[in-house]
Image (cartoon, rainbow, N blue to C red):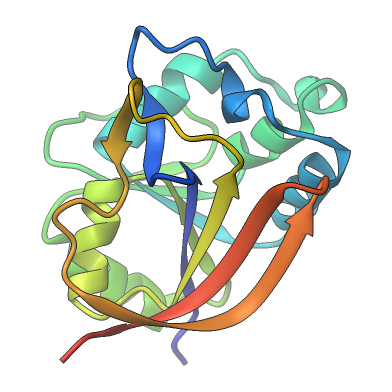
Length: 194
């Protein structure tokens, strides 16, 4: 049995996954609303395994490190994300990792994710981790890309262009939602072009 691997991406309309130090946007570019937050709570309340690269995991440790189970009342999205079973693919991090339910795995990311897809009885989801997921897309291991587009353009302060250096892909739209009247969540099946 092969489980589904979803790459979960946040970006601006112009394709940036974050903003540089001189940006003043704040989390979710300051555009989150109740529909978006409710949807994220639901998505991260499902049984699934999170797969992260080292850089995104370090960022999670920095921003989510203080969250406990009791934090769910104030920050349900990030608390649920932190407490999912997590696999971190890294050649630079060392055990033990300060995280609730984490496996640190070394080796070829494609081999690791291929093994997880074959052996897991729950879906796999990766949030962020652009370089990891671009390589997994090239290897044909990403089944779905869930792109949440926030209604901003960050041409001056944009940092980390999500799909920079990715191969060319054709996308089949599987699902779409408009949240809070202006946030677009689009789910695609990627197929290597050509």
